[in-house]
Image 1 (cartoon, rainbow, N blue to C red):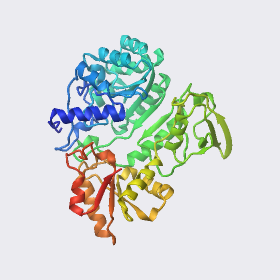
Image 2 (image 1 turned 90 degrees about the vertical axis):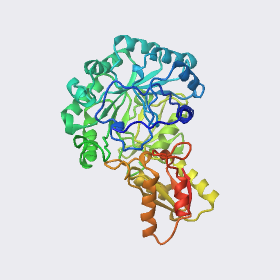
Image 3 (image 1 turned 45 degrees about the vertical axis):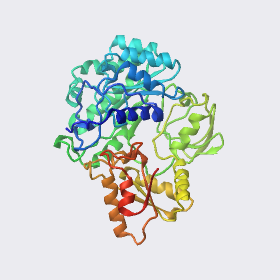
Image 4 (image 1 turned 180 degrees about the vertical axis):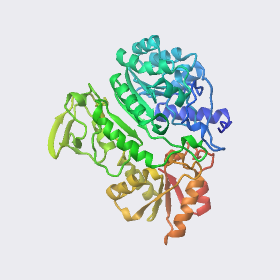
Length: 455
């Protein structure tokens, strides 16, 4: 296991404030009370910048609240930054912290990701008083023995029981499972999904597992496992009412298909069904799943034009503006990305542009260029393999400058023309343009003599 990189306090505070400003994320603690087999920090190569902040003080958290947007949900416990996220409920002052958040933002939804180990009856009752709250419960197995195997959870029985308590108290929650059927078995995965369905989860998210080149042998699997899991999810959807989604999804088209409907939601009351195709929202043609989902979210009482088994239907949806509809759709691509690309290309007056992207996003980026970019011949897309992390890693956020450099070398060696502009995925870099190893993307411009921008 690599040790967290020590860094100056100013930089860590900048990361924390950036998370609050840009994503409404409120880091609470890096301390965790379980030891998951699949924890990414256990597989990181040396040199990865990941920061352990311990338990933040109540005063530090109050200072972060000044940067939170009350019009967006406050997100607690979600690990999407370089700051390690622990178990929020394990913070000794978490009750005071959560009550302070609610005092500052009386009507703002709060989203908390938790492993469930601290969710007893009294805690669930207390959470109900602080609504609106949505819990993201990382259950992973409804079998206590398997949960102990996966997470080293000494309170596995309580964690499994937490799903039932949340459902009975009427607290909105989503269940998540990091699928490792070669360890726990396919039957365990089925039983966990059906258990969450019975216990009133709104959505069940099946996370496809991943491993780096440093992972233990027991964590490695053939990449065909992802397709097996997607096929499995397709079958199990027919057995439960709650939407079941795979993350990341496999995207090879922009067909805006609805994969699930949250029970009791506006979409459910309107009679929408999984498999419906969203054609237009209040007269605006839907371009992608993301586009259709956001249009529906933004508008009050939108009129949805759908296609059901090749039949056109008009479905009025009764909901407020910026209120959740209950539609569940896979994440594909926001067409606005290509307008952003066009602006950057125009600024640089470049006629030959190379977009470097991850294996996971490659197909949808190529589809997007052909569908949304006005001059597709001007913009080429190059797939970048993750050499630094290796293993099964295919996400853009884990690509490094060294990965981009090698891909660019190979592209230039095989290409007759040299691009005038290189575009990189912004998710791979912090606000200073540094990757997960601390290297800046400006090094690429210096090495190759080509203008570089992040997008």
